[in-house]
Image 1 (cartoon, helix red, strand yellow):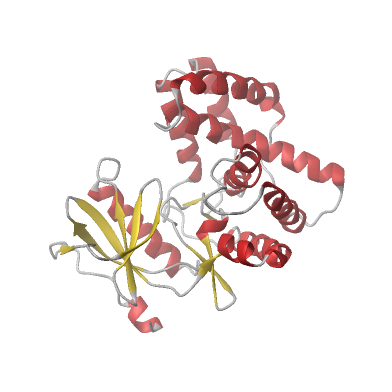
Image 2 (cartoon, rainbow, N blue to C red):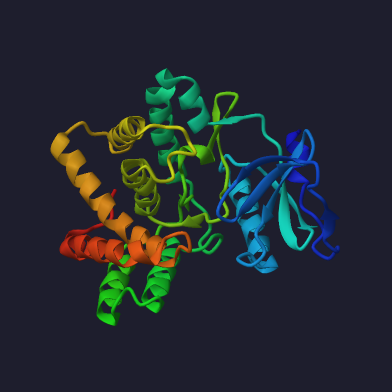
Length: 309
């Protein structure tokens, strides 16, 4: 698809939504928010699950994707918003690419160069500036998670205030944050990285991306949670993360690396607690003890956390 056609994919907002069907279409993947189908050789559609995704939310997701592309973030361009039965979806360009997860599983020798590529990509993303207000403030996502956890009864008001203070102390930056940079969302096309699933992108300090990545590359990998669909082993995730941290922070000092990981882990605990507290897939038998244990870890170090870099 030509650059010109990519740039002219903006539909007329006054037109009624086009209705399409995914019957007979190849299912490319499923996630927490929806499913992706191949429409033809040039386009795919992401169909969002209805109850958790209002038309307005989907429209904002589409605008976020478009804004990221316009600002030079390597991602697929979003075309029109459509109706798919009782649900809504967004049509995207089709890319001829495989995920880093697929590439690593197919050829484990690629792991180290891919880790360095991820670190270099992070540096680029975290130095790409947007006009303030173009995308949401990444701190608002954390605040919303704390609010939802408090409403679910897992934070006392005083505990929530301590966490809000920690979030407020994260400096604002007008640089790009993806929020979900696991190997399945990093695609390789002609030797270049393409990001997918940029719906939750925001602007903010790098600690937001680093904490989210820690949950996948370290926490989830150790627990054998979420990594099984990638096919990457616990040992491979550990190696990926170690190389990424060394290259991103330009250090080989074991003491410095240990402190970097301690801090990133601390911020990741906020997201972990929020996920466990609100996820319908977590059983009530596990929810309370896991949150209790994780809260103890968070509040034991909360006063020593500081955003890095």
